[in-house]
Length: 324
Image 1 (cartoon, rainbow, N blue to C red):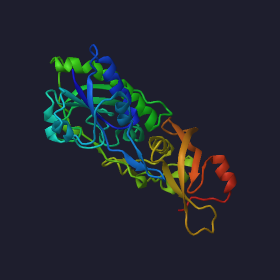
Image 2 (cartoon, rainbow, N blue to C red):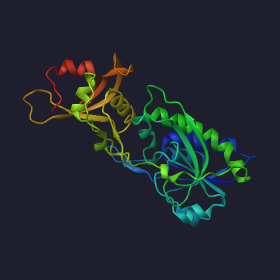
Image 3 (cartoon, rainbow, N blue to C red):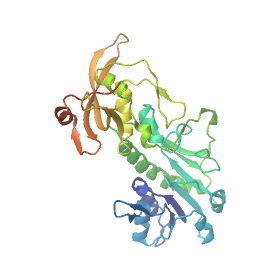
């Protein structure tokens, strides 16, 4: 068995590691090449930062490619591809190059939350978490399902913690699935495309929490407004304390939720304040006999400053206010 692995970030390294370990036969390792994103200049000195998958492959002498078409150009001898958060569209010619195609690990229960931000969308909307293994076709996250599993979400899960768990489990699933799939023992099921929802790449401006929503949530109040979540198509949520607390966790570790504050009433221009961590405090039982909550902020970072506790921030700026 010979595999080309398409992936980039640290959290998918468990997948390529387990593929190489569990599907090994004799002295031949199954992962014969990786396709990953090019190293990018980073920091003040613009040193090149190599991807985690690049680093893993380099240490083991596995050939590394930065363009999927290089697989064809170099006539890489492989029967199947595995893709996990590669970060770019794979051309159809590359998909068809492999006898058994390419299997993609997508961290949501497809067809829900196709696209670039499925874990964040799962947390923000309080949806069932899980992952889906699909056979890639020409459309984004559209191919038929080979396997799917659900995962419990913990009350303090961030995007990082939930995503890490999903890919560790997916690694265990795929090493058992590939031999069965290549032997023709896996029943493929088409997605219900009518139920598909989509997400896009998150931008820093998408993580803005309107100050009035935050102020109301801190007081345990719920505004009648509906909050449009820009990176999830057609998603409107009630901006109560529960919703904001989930949003703050979903934006961690990047790009971090933020809002505007005025440090003094006389200030003309508000400052950006990152909301790094928060939790819920039970407030009362409402008329529907369910619990109401208020939002408690734990950690923040004012623009140009270091991260501090909410207590330190409020003591340092006792006259701060959320602009209306």
